[in-house]
Image (cartoon, rainbow, N blue to C red; front, top):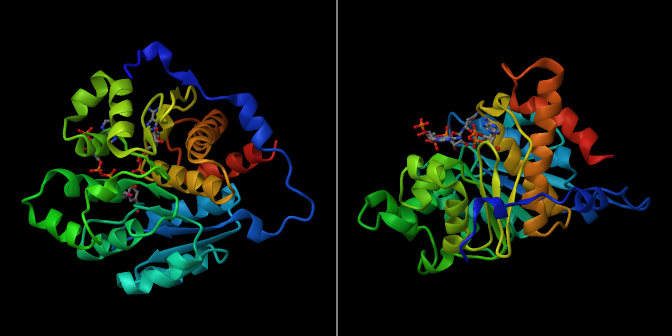
Length: 300
Ligand SMILES: NC(=O)C1=CN([C@@H]2O[C@H](COP(=O)(O)OP(=O)(O)OC[C@H]3O[C@@H](n4cnc5c(N)ncnc54)[C@H](OP(=O)(O)O)[C@@H]3O)[C@@H](O)[C@H]2O)[C@@H](O)CC1
Ligand SMILES: Nc1ncnc2c1ncn2[C@@H]1O[C@H](COP(=O)(O)OP(=O)(O)O)[C@@H](O)[C@H]1O
């Protein structure tokens, strides 16, 4: 499929409004899934926490975070609704994967042996996934640097042939252009020159849904490519992508398809950022500033 830029479709606002109709009066938390966030290696606790908070604020029934033990007290102190779990090995992660209905992996994951063990365990499940940040960097390593020790270790963390497993229908990959360049073994300049083609290449290479982030984020699904027409330069601040991955995970947990979770997650994220920037300005906008307007948008 060769797609022209003009063929990127707008995100379907009517469908989004319909999807956000009020909840059934007798709803309970079990109706809205259990999302597991995996990330937050040493020094990057905030990324996993922001993804977890965004996921909960999007409406997931339950949210657990699998992270390094030293982050647990801070997580509980800030957001006691999140179930913060200490995981030091793939074995520790297994019971959490059994409970989860969707996994978001990558925010602050790092690229250490711990990170690789976490990714290996997650890729061995059939759960729907949102794959972000360092999980994408590790995927890229597995794909293209066969002789590199890090790549080899990452591969060994997986059961079977890693590259065979690096395509699946039930995942959403959310690279920024730097991550996309690693996934496609090209440069960020090449990505910038034809974002639409590269979004499509990502989808074809990895299947599922690919979100190529940046101004005018593109969502490449197997059937079509969509473009977000909202968003602003205030979003150029650390943590914005972590919040996006949590929002998409929260929609998946509530039963949205991978296509809808990706399209509507990107739309809600950018719309929330536009509301926050309109209120207080672009400069100094923080990723967590999106959570209050996000909630308003989710309950029209
Ligand atoms: N509070 C926390 O705990 C936080 C933790 N975080 C965690 O840090 C980890 C590393 O993630 P990261 O994205 O900072 O590093 P990395 O993948 O090397 O990307 C930078 C490279 O990509 C490029 N690039 C990026 N955007 C681009 C664009 N729009 N358009 C074009 N290029 C773009 C850029 O290229 P440049 O423009 O500099 O040439 C640069 O080379 C990760 O796990 C994450 O979750 C963060 O989320 C922050 C908050
Ligand atoms: N200038 C911009 N215009 C619109 N959206 C932007 C802009 N800059 C960043 N964003 C959005 O903010 C988010 C940044 O994600 P990412 O680079 O992964 O951040 P982080 O790794 O710090 O969490 C993406 O959703 C991207 O589309």
